[in-house]
Image (spheres, rainbow, N blue to C red):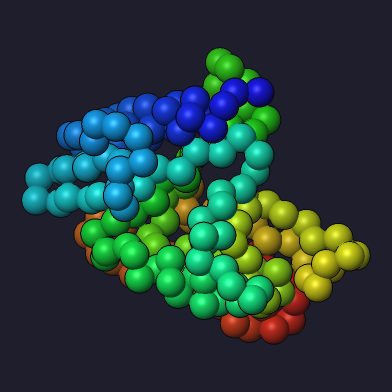
Length: 184
């Protein structure tokens, strides 16, 4: 088991490498825990502030510092207000990844993540964005599965989609699915 600092360092390195592999210039901020973003990625006139989140346990805790009275939706709203429209998240997952393999990586906007967090747990909301989570019988969302949309996978197509400000794909009809207790 590696430390959280080592996970964060490795995640930033893999994220920077992936942007560079896609032909983007990457600048890394010096020092840990920089405000809002860790990297700046530039391609021509396109510029993104990239907040990198690494994980080795299958989820990314994002809104815990904003939770009060189990009000998950308000916590998400408070978290979302802290991010600009030019910020994107690069989520890096090391769980179950061999040392000689690349981690799984995803790109998402703060708005996409906010919608997903609010729809998690059958609409109750959550502070953790899970790569995949099956809710057990003890949970309000028993029998449902929360899974990151496949469209968030870090690909050149996904990067280009986010960077030009296009309406990102991969956003399921969350309200409808949450009401039915089933998230993809």
